[in-house]
Image (tube, rainbow, N blue to C red; front, side, top):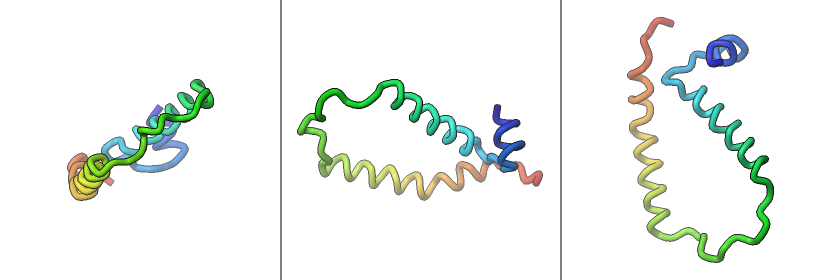
Length: 80
């Protein structure tokens, strides 16, 4: 529960719900990796990075870096 864990145990202000959603994602990812177990065979040889995927990751990271603070800041009420 967000109220018990984030506000109670961690004593943190969760602006925009980012702490809650990232904690859920981290624990869900760990549980999914544990449930799936190790790979049975080696990965395919065609899973290397390409120029297109590098450019998309650069553009996506830049957009998040520029616009995420204003998105999260808009959800703050200022009732600290």
